[in-house]
Length: 426
Ligand code: LLP
Image (cartoon, rainbow, N blue to C red; front, top):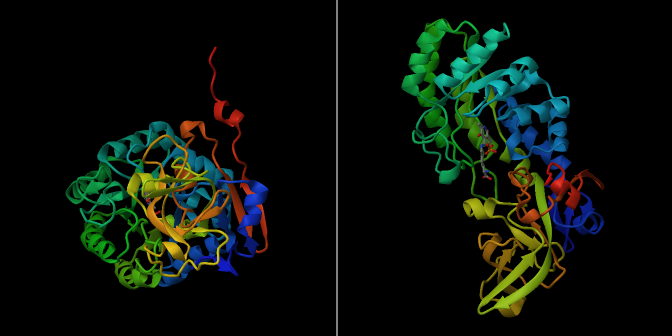
């Protein structure tokens, strides 16, 4: 579903050979495909067309302005979790009336900023937060639209660090408390209940958790309506899986087939908050091999990209396909781990950061590599750049947007001066 492919042994992003970008821009760098971003947004939109969804792209997955701008032009709304994300959305001219705001720790200042900007609604995660919104809205003589983010206690069967809809997680309001909040809502004149919301975790590779959650949540809709609230929206959050390895996830059509009938029956409008699905496979990260080091029975490909550029393997043991940018060996070729003599070897692909957790892949069978070789780390568009850091005082990588046969730098590589810009020592 993406537009990164090998042609005659060279990797292309759309119609640009990526080694050209590496030569011009340097490495490490993140490369995005404009056509793939649009394609993924529209795949989801079309699959759910019957429910006419408001797709609120989850900004945290990749908050780069160029990505936000492109999705805004496609008609996307935005799911935000901080004042900083709202600032980014407003900066690119995004429509606040298509912004939903989740997160367990919104400060009063952030709440005020969002009300003044005119966002569509807050996804409220606790009674205390609801009271804070009531107070801030009251002080601004405004009425704030809210959805209750519900914690339905459903296991999305994903990594424990990215599971959010189980009762032990900090997210959302349990159904019983939500029922009580709904009955007492008339005491809060500056909030208006317009939606019910869940986000279960990420990535979720099957439809089942969504169906389980909706089955638990929809009865609350009835009680809310019976109490006189005009609930217009059901927000099913994000989490839609992507192919990191290939073949592991449900498709948009699968998700839609299970979810759309339930939404239609509810009579509500649908909101979705996809992040990874749109950007994950619309981005790759390029890195150059600085050294190859043989140590005992291990081979290390030491690259110029590190955990500060893509932390997912270190943090969640995530799998990202890695392959040389120029190679006579097909990426899809099934590789025999013992086929050393056929030009393959087992590599730990690591970065230069001073931690043993700094790896991009471990024990991976790859074509034999040499110093100077370029590698592509695939599926790096989501939670790559947005989770990057300056750890080890490493300037952040550059970002490039490819469109057809052309490309542009959408974020300059940071300089050493950028590293210390906000600091002083006198
Ligand atoms: N909505 C809410 C309220 C969320 O918290 C998230 C992600 C999303 C939507 C979007 O989820 P997506 O469609 O992208 O799966 N850093 C982790 C993922 C953390 C997700 C946090 N919340 C990773 O790299 O896998």
